[in-house]
Amino acid sequence: MMRSPRLVRGLLVLASVLLGIGLVAPCMTIHPDFGQYTSWVKWFKPDLAATTTYSILGGIFELMRGESPAIGVLLFAFSVVFPAAKLATLWWGMTRVQLGQSGGVALWVTHHAGKFSMLDVMVIAVIVIAIKGLPGGTRITVGWGLYAFATSVVVSMLASHLVHRLDVKGEE
Amino acid sequence: MADKTDTTQAPKRSFAWLGALIPLVLIAAAAGSFFLFGGGAETPDAEPDDRAFVQVDKDYYVLVRMIELYPQRPGGEDWDRLGGSAPDIRYELEWQGNVVFEGKERKDTLIASWDALSLDLKSAILSGQVDLGSSVDAAIIHVTPDTEVVLNIWDADVGDKDEAGTITLRLGEMSPGDNELAFEASETQAVKRVVVRLIDHTLPVGELVEAATAP
Image 1 (cartoon, one colour):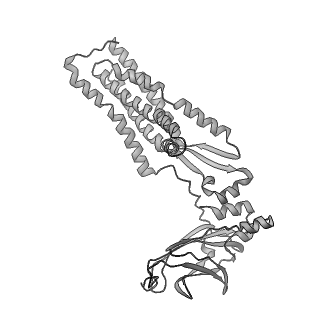
Image 2 (cartoon, chains in turn green, purple):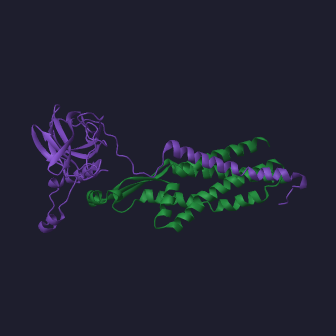
Image 3 (tube, helix red, strand yellow):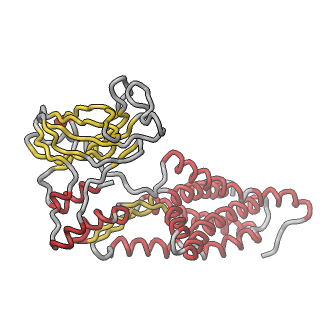
């Protein structure tokens, strides 16, 4: 029984580090292209035509500063707060299970917070945009930060599964 | 799901709750470390560093993009002896003994910059045409391995000009794109920094605009 808690803690450390890096590492790069008008746009609005790389957190803050603060807050809650809360409560639940207690409210919160994680929605959205492209030839390329973020969520799901198994074993 | 805790385990419960902070600290530490040592991601990407030299026996647009002067004139005196204002920076490019380009004056500044393209909208609207070649604010220079262009910089006063410095640009040793040159202040010159951009004269119009307007 001692091996699994160590494994779970290792997974939680890994997931936390990956989440931290995934939030600030390059997530997507936008290569604007305005077709035959590209040169003119670069002439008159060079900022609009510049290739820009965003992280998840940077993109969210950009939304908050710009015209979509509500969407920014929503994304911040689902992409930053919930994954972090899930890892925190998982660690709490793991500690309780190790102390011979029931996972109790910690694992209940984990279970419900996990449902609100936006990983699948966000990854699919980014991939669709990356594959489909945008009008005028503008392209979006996915950065390694997105993979770090996605791996963090997958690892946290695995950790969550193991903690729940340990909790059930403890109750038996 | 029955809670197996009893009153004797109360201190353990509080310890367990504090454990929730560990992932949060790890997340913040990882993000902070990456941000500090890896740099942020929300910046326009830098242009690829093309350190290839210019091709010889070819014509290039030579643009002076930026000039920075030291706070004092050559010799250490103030630029403006009376008002204390910054210099009015002007420059010219001299090639083979001839002035081939004169930059417009930039008033009261220690750092002057020039756009590579200027469009005469009035003339464009009246004629219905845009002559992009003549819209490039630059000298056209034929570059050989030994081509030298003299950059004369001065503070344009009314009826007078105070020399800021003279710099010899060896174009054959420069790269296409921006070339930043830095200088020490001396008794004869007060130019701190110059950015010179070289653009292939034969570029198609689209690429020419792209090269001329790159940040």
